[in-house]
Length: 411
Image (cartoon, rainbow, N blue to C red):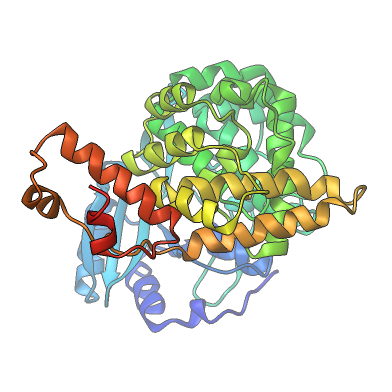
């Protein structure tokens, strides 16, 4: 019998909650990610609990133990217990009665085996009691030890219950899989990928974004392309390719670039503003993500031979984040080639210096206002705006050194 020892398991709040939900014929256990990550030596974020208590009884016991009970998904048996601002998601054991590929009708139960078998992957179905004894009903421990991400039971059946599991298969493989993905899972994902058309754009993008945020999504993206899944959810990548992702991973490691889902998306799609706007609308990206993606597509390609002053002018008049993204993508494209062409190393160094300049750039305050021009007889309207733009460019091209009087003398 496997036992785990972990600081999170000894947390008094968690122990109180497990005790409150157990006893009088009921039982509660920690389930899923916390156990998986502990066995794999990975960080723990959330601690989820499965319980035999029905939702109303869960609420009663949670509140009696001094927790606040929030009915976050009570129709599906989920109650969030909160103490000192820390949430624990508690869900009643259940089984799927009916599914349509997007949603499930569930029935509450008391059978730990049935509850385990309704989950997606073997490594996500582990449970443990308050003492740390791990209960493995579907072979999850062996799969963790072998680095295998495997659907529980029939892969096609699991996918047909919720087609989002195709994307989850590739996302969890990026996090926890080793070697080649499970063959049965790959075949099922390939055959059933058309069912993803039933999914809402929000669910697809949320899962795709999580995949792109993994430490290294390159292997998963490769298999998604091989199975046709990537072209289905991200057709913009089809003729553009995903080769730049490998270079981006190298550049991230070499230059301390943090994992960034939007930057990684930019690495596998063409810099076409109209297509990026359509992509953002189709997947219903946030306004901030859409704006960044379109601005990146509109930004000029890096000009690594321009002067520092010329680059500063571009930063002043352009979108600094978009310019920085363009530089990161350029570095990613150059990185793999540098191994066979040492002459590219100075070019990469220039790109890295330009990136640092872009990230540190703080535009100084322009010393002339529209009011100043109005006092000198320039009427409000397009002419005033055009003259201000001319002065701003002259000021920027001077290295931001021209003073107010010198600029006004140009009117």
